[in-house]
Length: 109
Length: 120
Image (tube, rainbow over all chains, first blue to last red; front, side):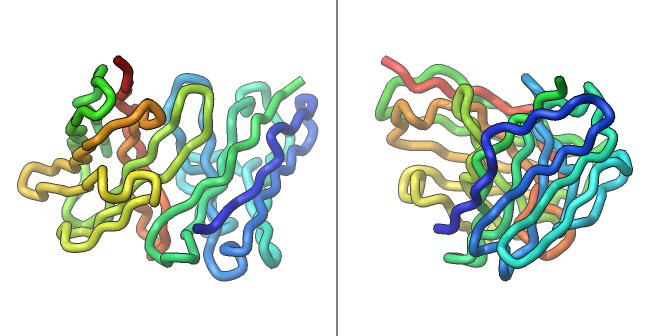
């Protein structure tokens, strides 16, 4: 099965820009999705198909893709953005199942 | 309001069985593929199973293949996960999720989850 690799943690001060990367061979052929999960809550989708932003997600959340890497960018980070972030894609081994990255803990200093 | 509500979690002994349910509301359930995703305590999200709109096609992660079965009843707007031969490493919060409308494996709506604990 495919693998997606994320950094375990990212720290930024309020107002700065946070970038979280996700790498994996499957991303060369499949779209990437990003989810935010706050402590004790269910995940919510914040980016779809590499760079789309679902309704209700603040404009400071954006996504990009290059080769085998997708990147989640949060500009002007706010304290409320502190959460775990997961990338996800289609498992290229099956083209039918899913795969998540290990998650990145975003800490707002 | 679009909503997914899981139920059926609990404490079960190793080797036992459990059936999880996920009731959908606020959208046409039969129009969407559906997923189960789990999260062990303090760990990350792990994709478990996926089912197509009419239930005729399913796929599961290797870790649960042959033990877990995903199914659905569109007349009842309900998704199921039958879990057999449970092991300690199956202990987790189990989320059901609706697939996004982009012809990709993705999850655009999530339930709050139900907790499964496997222990003697």
